[in-house]
Amino acid sequence: MPAASRDTLPPYASGAARLGLLYRLALAGTEQHVLVVSESPFAATAIVAANPEAAVDVIAPGAAAPRAAYDAVFVPGLAAGGACRANRSLSQQLLAARAWLVPGGVLAGDAAHLCSLRGVADAMRLRTGPLSWLRGAACASPPVCRRTLARCGLADVECYYVEPDIDSPLVLVPDHREVARRHFLRAVRRTRGRHRGPGYLARLALAAAGLGGQMQRQLFFRARRPC
Image (cartoon, rainbow, N blue to C red; front, side, top):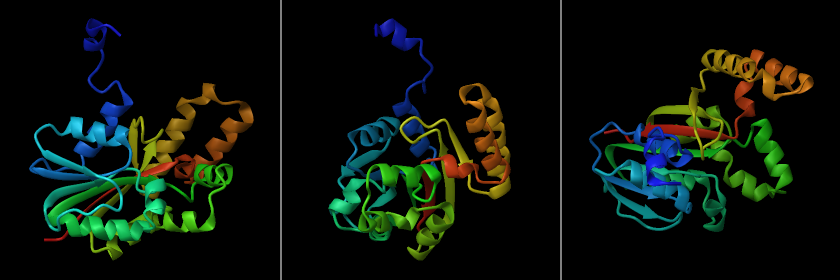
């Protein structure tokens, strides 16, 4: 695309720019040292580009980093294959991330919503083994994610559904039941023309029952290491 055309695009037109912004918004604005734990070049590059004022280190899952050295630790794609290849559960990765934070530091990440309808369908399609599934189960749903983060010694936990997906995020929906129900009802009605009658009615029924979040593949979370 010619440079002139690129310049006319909105600043967050690309999925990568929105992903970087998503993680940038997790910060309080005073963080100077950030650690990104990811095997995804796409996620790491997006986060680094969105935080030009901070010193950002990037490591692979399972690698070592200095303890209590970072104002923020980001773990994009927490339930991706790297966790299993490193033979570490999500809880172990979250405990490691907490140890890398200074007191008051921010932890943010995204994980597969394994208990969602799409998560179950993906597991069946990819023939995910029970051990691999269990290693990711610490963030399998918003309530489980909240409990896991609290057990890891983190406070001020927030959990969101990501719409439509983490590689091109448009909306974060709080996991509060009534807030999520109202949002997904509006979202289903707004996209009426994209679905055939039975599919539309099924989606509408899920949203009306407060289960609209079950249609989202990923969760985003934010927490803080207590001072």
